[in-house]
Amino acid sequence: MLSVEDLQSDSEKNVPLSNENSTENTDDLERTTPEQEMDLLTEDFDTNLDLQSPLQNFPTSFRISSTKKPKMKHVPYEPSEENGYQTECKEIVVLKVTEPFIYDVKEPQKVIIHATVATEEEFFRVKIFDMAFKDMFIPKNVLSISHYVGQDGFLEISNISTVSFIRAEQGWNISSTLVQRANATPKIEHILSLSEGKHVNGSFTVLKKTVRGECIFYEIQDNTGKMEVMVCGRLASIYCEEGDKLYLTGFAVSSSEGGCQLRSVLHSHLRVIKPQKSNDETTQP
Image (cartoon, rainbow, N blue to C red):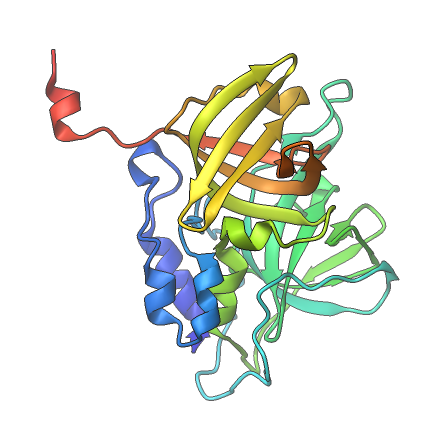
């Protein structure tokens, strides 16, 4: 069982995103997870890739009990969803976030942050539209959120929402399996089974790159299959080559003439990581 204290120690050991920290053993999740079903997921999505720098504002009174067990019958593979305006408080732990980014180049005041958060029983994808909450959505912070909107698989935090810190005096644990599934990259075989409009986060190596008009098409592959990623608009200006790794956030499952693809949409986020060069390559004149 993984406590939020464990999350703190793990995060402090990891180096923030850099070219030297772009690989991870994708077999670890399957070895450490007892369920056979975990072969649908892989842990190569680095949980620190889009993290903001750590926890200078983290509440010092935060405590986690190692004796309290989460009341959980089944650990979900997919993020939970809510629909409509939600006024009740939800207590969550922030697992990871992206940096703030402008999602509409014509209106630079339109900024968003993506976050993955968890309760003891489930995890959620979150969009933060009000940058007044930026310094609260930092990994490992425990928050109470309310007056948000559930829409298209995300919890949307805006200027009408309420967000506050929680002093976790009674303590609560988060299953390590839940954290792994919240942070994992889905296998392509699993993505192909999702309904159109579902959103996907994950890391994938580019096998092939094709430019068609104002869009770029990337072919990605894992040990379960291949599929296409279509990148248009502001994200098409991000330079990426074959062999690079794409870190996708909020890409939508869509249909195309060639079958299923992942497509960038208004609030999508994209990071590109260059493969680490070997010693032989770096020492060549």
